[in-house]
Length: 273
Length: 284
Image (tube, rainbow over all chains, first blue to last red; front, top):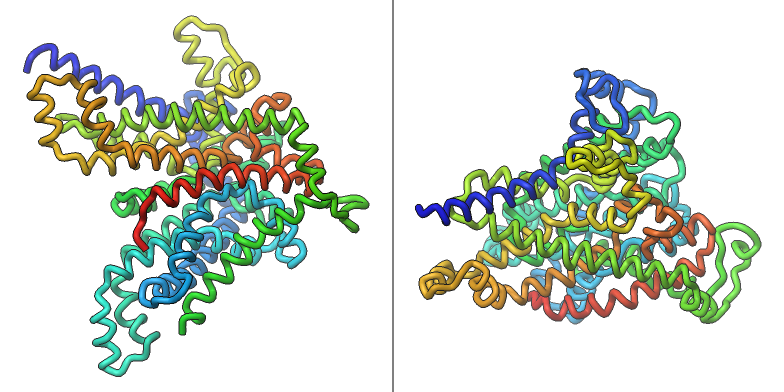
């Protein structure tokens, strides 16, 4: 290898290392303060303790935030998948008028920025008496992620040979029975990807719960962290950092599983936001 | 059978996604308030809200902020760094691809509240804030970035958050380019820059353009990341249109005005969106 080439490679390593540092350094505060007995708002060498995590799980209001986040995200994901798999099956196997229009319309929904509909949504939810409740938020979150789930699952079901279902019908299955026996076992990877995408979107959402929920007992982690951070005079930085760690672990792990499924562009587009 | 299968999805999307968009258009033509007299008895006011908005310096400034934010963070920053990352991670001799990739992905994967929280500590005005320590190393004086250059700060934060998305999109596009093509141009004596400019870039023009549309659309919708850090301030220096809508509707209770601002934002985005759907060329 010539020395010019070695220098070129070295420079490319330097570039990548700088990029990686830029991405990682901001996390230093969360990682260090979460295990620091005297954590403050800035980075410092920690006096190691797991006390912040113990506090997080034993304090009066913080476990509640985690429970709320789980209740909302799991329910919304379940509802989203239940509707999504039936709808995607219909979009994949039936030829009906308006099918194309429907598919493109829901693709266009991706374009609507959440802040642009949140005002009207809030007023509607108040009128339907669905504001300030788990149910209302779950319905909204499940609906918001449905276009992506439908697209993703329709693609997965398209790839399952129709003959398999016909064979099941021959054996006496009903249409729904065939969906249960043939489609569900084969749709696994797509369903897993849709589940993770939906879960992560709901888990990370900030604007919708901020607007729809007023009762602190219903707050998910996103709102709890925001309120704790903006309570300037009485911030417990250590617990705040520990909460942030607890909050970021599920999506970080899920993403590890999900990466392989997000190769192609239209699916990749589902991820951001 | 069909209504049973597709019905639940259609109802959910119609009620919680489509209806609010339509209801928003109606609200934008009224003087609806959250509280007070107009809350009980909203009046139809025609295009008054739109007239007020288009002659309001504050609203026009918010559109300007959003434009700046999208242009510098998404179109320039994320695209350039995402492309650099995608190209560098394709090098066959590179070691530690997995680690570099994971590091670049982390900012996108964490919830936006955590992203804001981490940057609040980096940009802290205190002398021991991460940023101030860094410029201290180079002999600079401590600064308060979120107060002194708020727009630049949130642009950098958003670049940080979006590099990974650009990288993923570009990696997918680059995979379709045959290696022989690059090698052939190398043999013909083209340098790395020339190869990128005359071979790689023309071949991935389509996906790059799609990415630019997509990132424009999502960046216009950014709310929490910025609101958490600055709440639109100081003054209204970082008041993006999304924050303008939130503040006017929910803090000043001007639902009608906020809805009109939403409609204007939607109309602007629909132009981008329709282009996106046409260019995406997805099969149904």
